[in-house]
Amino acid sequence: MRWGTGGAGWGPSAFPFWWGSQLAAAQPGQALLSPAAWGQLRLSVIGGREAKPHSRPYMVSIQFGGVHACGGALLHKRWVLTAAHCFPRSVVGTAVVGLHSLRDHGATTQTFPIRAVCPHPGYDRQTMENDLLLLQLEGKVTPSRTRRLIGLLGRAPAAGTECSLAGWGVRGHGGLSPTLQELEVTVLDTRMCNNSRFWNGDIAPTMICFQGRHRGSAPSKGDSGGPLVCGKRAAVAGVLSFTSPDVTDPFKPPVATSAVKHKNWIRKTLRRGCGSPQPGRTGQTDHPVLFTQVGF
Image (cartoon, rainbow, N blue to C red):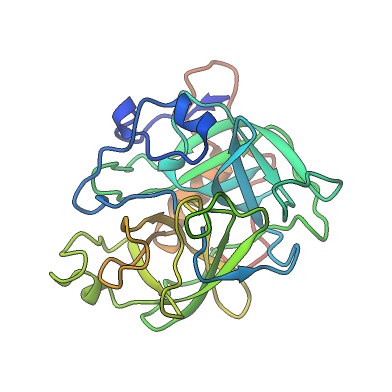
């Protein structure tokens, strides 16, 4: 596995909370949190419902030691979009595509080692700005009914836009959800989210603040890195980043990093890969034309 250059704060104190005993033992401690990320958690869906099996064929489970840790979105046959805080240097991960049940890695799924890890060069673990990362897979996903690409939304969603998210994260006070859960959400006004009663100015222009459409519904531990999906034709608007310790606190709504506002970096990385400390491995994709869906 290769690491790309760039990305701030990759020391031990940057490692966020990991779900699962194997992961907890694999890293030194909880994240160092800024005011913006004082409640940073690996964002499961509370108050949602089980998704229809394989109705979101772009969803990816990022796993460490065989344990689900984060979600991701399949943008290209070789590339997965997730959150930068999901992937510490010291842990070797895999990406599982075509999954519905965490317990059933059957013929509908493909599992890939990670070839390259490309965090956004402007990622800041203190403010959680630019919390994006692209994973290059060691191999190509074979498209099927259960494994499909998703594109980027054409423009940033306005306040009031209805979107959705999905994940395998923690349900209530229990463990990881055995099956993919989904939740309907509404995008909130950034100015309101930056009000002193809410995130008090910590929401950057490249972040998306949102809330569950039904009272008491929210993402929680285990959903970080999953896509915020909007539009009549499903497309990625953002990537789940952080929330409050009380995930249903109406004054600390969950936050995603805008994928739309980072589409130039995403497009460049998908075409060219990222820098590598290991010689002889370019990390480039096979084809420069990457999307046939909603996007650039």
